[in-house]
Image (cartoon, rainbow, N blue to C red; front, side):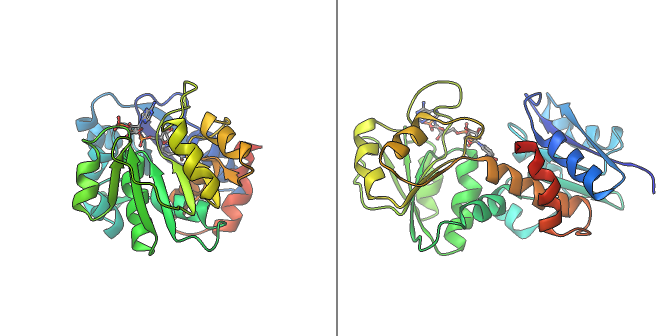
Length: 264
Ligand code: NDP
């Protein structure tokens, strides 16, 4: 079989760990594939670029997940529901679109058992698909965001939503930082008075940011709470994408064995 080509499309894309993750798994599993990165400036050109590069599959990161959704011929039902695609596979000239961010996130938090209520700090793109999958799975999700505009669509979908000004705190089993606060600065995702009230009442705190201990996770640790960063979410969305890329030839466990070396 000729080597199959894969890529991550985004802008910027130079920081992405996806090429390393997938190439480690290709090598370890002896799959004849190669994964590269491609900085796509114009999201409207996603489909054209996919075919002109001769690709078999791609992952899509910020800011092109909606463009990826538009580019697909066939959508997986969950991707269709959330309007965001992060994995595309070509089969017989047609583009099939999936969202692996949300199931990856669900798997990453599954180690926290007896969880019913979840507070999302943030309401951006990542919160969109992950809040939907949690709701589908029966969790009660509340969103707290810095400003009101992004909360509108969540309110319409029946979520409890608050800004810092009108927040009426309750007890939440999990508190999850879904913002980019702490990614490139030292800011907390919400005012310290709010966090100091809700974190002590929680069972665990999670950050979707990976590769560093954010101020949010530091604060959670100061209350002796179990914490988790975004590495597993990243790893698991990659494993699920790899399953689609290779048509479910390998088990989740076997893919993980090689892909996890990215984080060692
Ligand atoms: P978006 O740009 O779509 O949304 C950003 C959100 O963060 C908004 O709710 C925004 O609030 C809020 N925000 C930004 N800065 C601050 C701040 N200083 N204080 C409080 N709130 C703030 O981002 P994404 O959803 O795409 O990404 C969010 C995070 O998720 C990023 O850190 C990204 O790295 C991470 N991520 C991790 C993944 C993983 O696999 N682990 C996968 C994808 C993303 P407002 O509406 O008021 O502007």
